[in-house]
Image 1 (cartoon, helix red, strand yellow):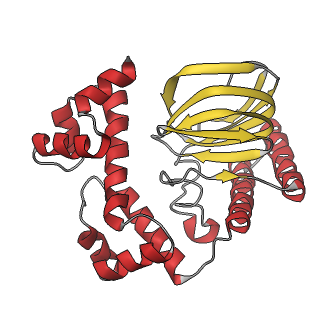
Image 2: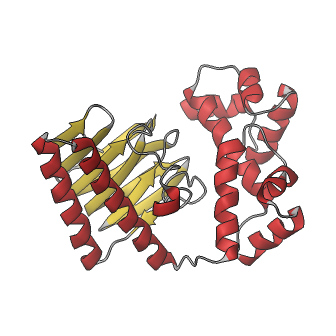
Length: 281
């Protein structure tokens, strides 16, 4: 977002809310790596953002969600009103609250399909009410402020999950649950576990059953899912770490750096070194 006319409320560097009110075209050519959980609510505006090397365009009222490690940049934006919420794991743990909130793998830590949540007028009014209370609590500095702020954040996330499920008709059936469990498991273990069989065993199903589940919900194969997550992390590290290609290969669970280079080249049609040079150029 363009840095102009931004009012920021914060709590001990672990939770913040920025309110943006301006109308200005902005282009940021240099991508940034997100280091906290972030919610962008473009209440009135349009533009084009790049998230993890994919372009997303928006026009109107929309929310989207970013997790630590994701790559973000602005192609163009013209914003009249927007909000940005940032929080770290120590303030609100996505994994700990997932059973009750159900946002892990749906809103956050969903690098396979960046969720754009489009609220209707009634939902917008509810979100506005939560933010008004949130801003008021930031100003109070009263007893148990941490708990109150966390409660309002939780309400905001729960409402966003409900909107997402309603818009995308996400049904709580066995297929969707298995897919979500698999995606969360991959997110936690992709640097160590590379085979479908290893994940299937942890989920208590056969590799064949896991593949059939993917076919039913219209996604890529489980093998492609794992491969794409490894490639995405490789791209991130190639651009935003000082590690050598050999070190990156080892960090992603490859014992042979040469095999990692072939794996990356086959998936992207560019060698790791070529990808790094072309991107910076």
